[in-house]
Length: 462
Image 1: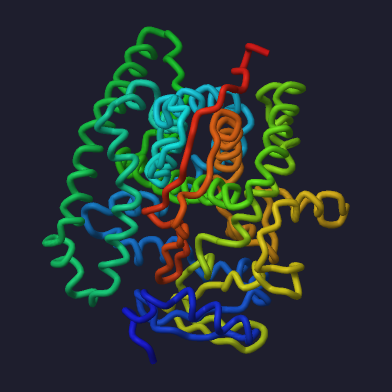
Image 2: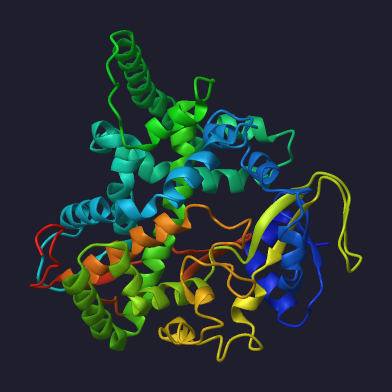
């Protein structure tokens, strides 16, 4: 049995090698212990099993008992407030944020990307993170905190710091992890970020509570804030919760994977420059005809197809929907998962030649063509999930914030492609960062950029 450190280095390659030739489970020693990885042919049965708990995975593998991982402590409490907020606002209400997202995206792009009309090299990984953070912060924490430089720094860095440190801790025995966490510079960074978050978020929460109480005492309607600080207050309904931890959890969910989709999509488009002008023409036409509306974003079929193809070619996880067995579980084919063991489903159908024509090829029109088939049209949409494409998981274990994230990234890409030219840096191979279960855009990713003399009209100016 290979060691957990070996899996951390070679996990994606081992999983791909096994499932390219086999349609049966395999058991590895992964960074958190034993893990059974199932073929995607078992995904339908897996996703319906309540005995396989995602929250247990989040609490265990992201060390929710340690100070610094407070976001995961909050998100895995029995109240599950974060899930309620995402389902109640970021999923069902995503359409109403198209106009403010476009305005914030335009402003963020101007600040982050600049106006240099000469070709120049940029560290686009950092810029992509900045764009996601600056575009979404007004919805996350409201106007008061969204322009605070200290908060913007935390919201950009905390998710990545937490992911890296959680992975490092999993390579140690459980007995030693608290000591390693206490002594590690990354552990100190996390604790400092959490403490600073408390000093920034909790005064806002207390101020709003006092404001609300004073208004109710006078018989006056309290102010209504449109941000996740307010939504957590409403979801808690007077019960205790960790307001700072809630914000850190939301940022981990809303920034880490979303920035990967933004950067990955643009990198793939740069690798295929022949698609850039058709994308621009589609974007121009949709906005000119319909303005900044959900319907216009829906009609950007080629852009939607490009993004979904990026997910297919490079899913952020080579095995998805990781969960722990709350009791002994036996699948219908006899596969046994003992209580307390980690289990996941391989994303092997994403590059299966029996499912996709030329699966190794990036085909920007693949899902656009699928929309023309009435039987496949629904599953061709970026936000929708299926057994063949688990870029966002698969219902009921799909990412609940995917509708919001898809619109956010599509809006950013629309502005970026119209306002800038992009191309790969000569000599850069735009490699991926592959470790454990993850296949991420490499933090060193660079692109060449120059400003164009074109902009999309802002909402209300058409």
